Length: 386
Image (cartoon, rainbow, N blue to C red; front, side, top):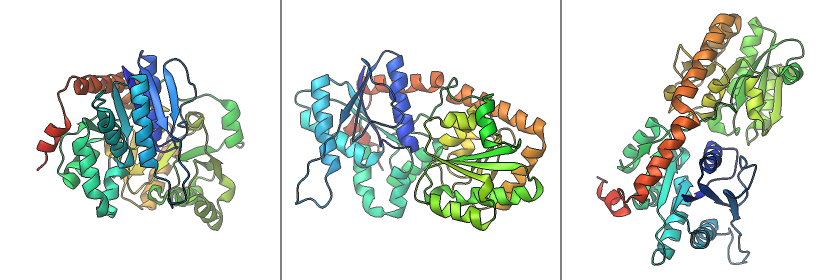
């Protein structure tokens, strides 16, 4: 197949999944065309099967904000005709689905290119905060030729919010050979020069991630287990505030802010416990990546996380903001090497058996074939709404 993929080219989960999906499809013999404003962060190599088409923005004084969605639609239509695309796979409903639908409609007399929309979370939960997006998001779902969601939780939220139930759940995934436990003595030595245990958190430091809870947990743990440090990987609007909180709590020397890293798997691979105190995760991709690296997960019992983390087997779950319990659970794991290793082993098993690329990528390919076979159309989708 000849597939056009559009993602937000950032460190967010949707950008990661869309980028790695394209790479995996290319390795299986398909041709992938990324259509975006910049090259997605996880796309590290272009070749005969992986191409990039930059969306160019027009500068015009009339526009206070440049109309990216229209520029994207124009580029998608141009690429579809020039490259004879079989389908568009867009990640996030707003604005990517709308752009894909505009592109499809603008060229359908010459070539019909179906639009598949994958929902990742805030494109649905955003509507709960701003209902003005509801009509256009519902339209995007109804007019897509196929819709997938990354978790059962997100499918349920889509049904409840939009009265739309034509959604197939295809979870996020990991490559087992990329995410694994490491015996990198050099990196471990740099991060834990005195043999400390390592906690780790990875996020985009948005408020919803509650990254400050991680330094709260560190401070509580250190009172009873002094030889521990916290790695904070990623960047975002809350990073400065979280660093300040670490200073206020007196743990700034043991809270290591490493910023954005292309080798996140290495940091996970040398750590001991993963922290994810978010107030909402539609799937919990970071938790899955951590489990694949044999890290027990300390997380909140919200959204799609319970689908990924088996409580009492691969991690411990808590209510949002319950840093006391999260710290206590972290201490249990740090003090009990046997439990920590058992949780890590079980987490790896779950990740590989349920979420490896060999399990998930064929599900996407089968869904593509289903849509291309005409088993679902925009008009039939609209008829399914209540």
